[in-house]
Length: 545
Image (cartoon, rainbow, N blue to C red):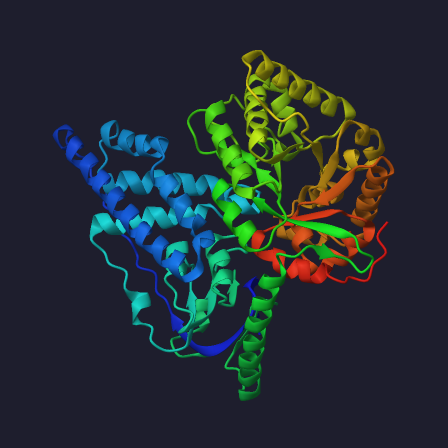
């Protein structure tokens, strides 16, 4: 048995099809000044061709899966239209005299490398999108056609190093019964598409290609991440039956997900989605989400040469508010610092960046930048049920200073005669143990708490969750974590405030009953986890506090 990461639930038992990755050899040529315009034109033509290819893929996905699953490709088109990226590629051609193919490959590789080093799993997986686009551009410029997937005309399990979102979108579930990759994570766009296509997937299996050849029989369990080479007839028959049952169950789950999640004692638990871009709203709605429990606004600030304007931020926040049509939208103010750096801010290197100048600490120092964001959020509040949330609060003093700036932003809009909603709920992330321990002192100043379980766990145990050597300490179900959550909920409820959880713990069925039993009011997670979580909660026999 081989153990990987369960990325898309379900079962498969079929022969293997090894999908070989085309090795792209990118020519690096120093061009003469007279050829600069010609290379720029080559770049423009390649970008147009790639956008046309993505548009075709998008339309195919729309027809097969619906408009809500096109967000990935809308995001790719936005990246290709980003004037900052285009300027970076032009600079490589004009100032460095690089050929267009190398310039595009170099710029997109740089952006992919930036995202790969981030701690936030959602943002880290965005590196795959830049690599996908990088290789698309290169193939168009080099005249390479990737037709390997078109050869498949029988039921198989694809085994490969990695799958791009574009490749995943081309998979035909009639023949592709499972996916196995050497690398990857559960929040990648490829994993999200695999779940939508109902193709079981196991990722992060290491150097499995060395043990597998075409037509090797393989069985996979996408629920546990287990792989079995050369399965016996009993396992093959059982996995085929389990997959049929799972597909039927999933159809029922999605139908039921649009109803409220009620416990046995009648308490409604809000089940919301975490998003990073406005396009992600479609998936939340398609999966029956009750709202947006976490909009990671820092996505708007990353990989740019200058800070997004108030207008740009307003448009993004308003788009989400409009899309969610009155459902709650919690916008977390930018969580910059730690592993997320902005080139347009003077951010000095720190020995311990995750314990340093990040999130609310940076915002309180960069007041004008913070006020710009707060005004944009306030303006967007006229388009829906917008709430604001401050990250990384550790003391009452920090919270009061943030709220003072929130009030100042309101005064600035009043002076401009710019409208905003009169009543906007404000909340904070509970991700620092000190905040959990003084929740009773913080509660009078907010309308809600949202527990960021990822950071709360790693700060409580002083253990980097990405460091395998101390990974044994990263335990969401440890009594220390449950006691902190219990204290936060009790302190909040005693003062009439509600509590959500928006870290990975919130979307894990293993911890659903614990959290609901402790009295948590809202759970926010990856959109595709919503239907299963609602099923877990329905009729849950608990007596919440």
